[in-house]
Length: 76
Image (cartoon, rainbow, N blue to C red; front, side, top):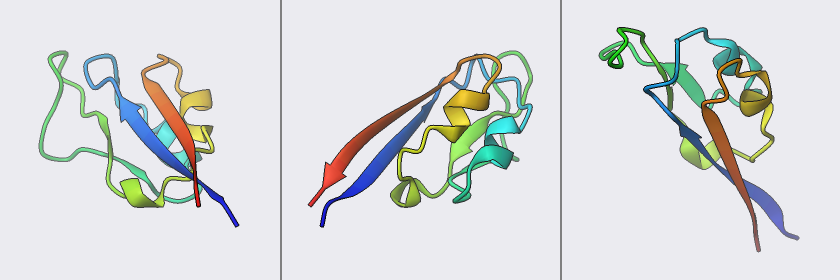
């Protein structure tokens, strides 16, 4: 049985740290960084559990700045 695997890419320079993607992710794949900020001074979302991502795109759908891209592929 094939299952979906995802990869989440965040454009950290466009991210404003609103946390909507973190809250929307059902698997806890994303978190706001606590040790860095982008060039605009915002903490940004980063992938913390990449192997857990199923590519559901919930994070990308809720992002008001469109800075998240999700790639999906089937794994056998």
